Length: 358
Ligand code: SF4
Image 1 (spheres, rainbow, N blue to C red):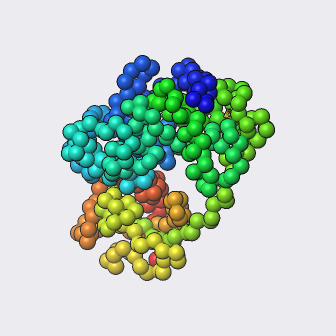
Image 2 (image 1 turned 90 degrees about the horizontal axis):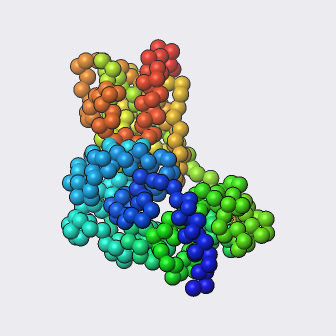
Image 3 (image 1 turned 45 degrees about the vertical axis):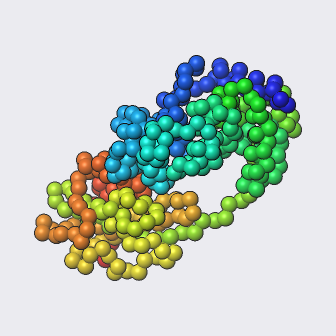
């Protein structure tokens, strides 16, 4: 055990400094695999602070994997709305059903079994296997990558260094006496001490052995290859009001981004500004608001013009339904659409007469 002393130092530190989290078992208690899995799926691309209320809402609505498996997908998507990356919510639901159907409601206790389930990749399989089942697996997230790159002063930039970082993380974790606490401690160290800016080296259990600290370059690591500039896409989104205080939403058709979610009607999103006159319905008179909505996706940035119209009592849309703001929580709307709703409900819709004419 090459790193036995470091392992003991980290485990001792985690014992003292572990944060209480709704999904984390208290010291000395056995973790609930359902809670561990649910939190790991939610925490991908998102922070602990954001996930907290979502996790609580899910376990209140669906306290077991069996209950989640029996839930309607629309309800799961509605509860997920705002967390983003909606494919994860769809896979979460599929995964719960697979656990019930193929494993009698019990999550597999090792990486090989877990990775076959929908939505579980190498990282999540390792995290659940180690945290929930104390299985010797190494889960390398962004926090662990940062700690490892600094501890060994690895100069190769991310993402090229990922394989090397994983290998060095595995060396540090090899044969440790408590994989569950070691995995959580490794991540916790990155999240609370070895932070991206101003790492708190004085409070770090590995300070004496850390190469980046010794060289005075901790804050410069990990180095990163400059990201290519994202392309911009453009489109129009339509706010169609009907008395009393109702607006039109529809279920997004087709596969891909936002599949199965609700939205305000939009045009396609293209790399060119949308040509004038292509509005939702020729029966309505649209006006453009002087506020566009901007949203950043992983692979592109989006600029949406907002076009508004007031529909008469007899207007019937081709698809979709008119709802009030109070009913919004029953529908899974992505945060992009919530931005538009907020903007329009916040008064812009009532300034139609001042808006630009179509
Ligand atoms: Fe990170 Fe500093 Fe600890 Fe090194 S000593 S692992 S840079 S917090």
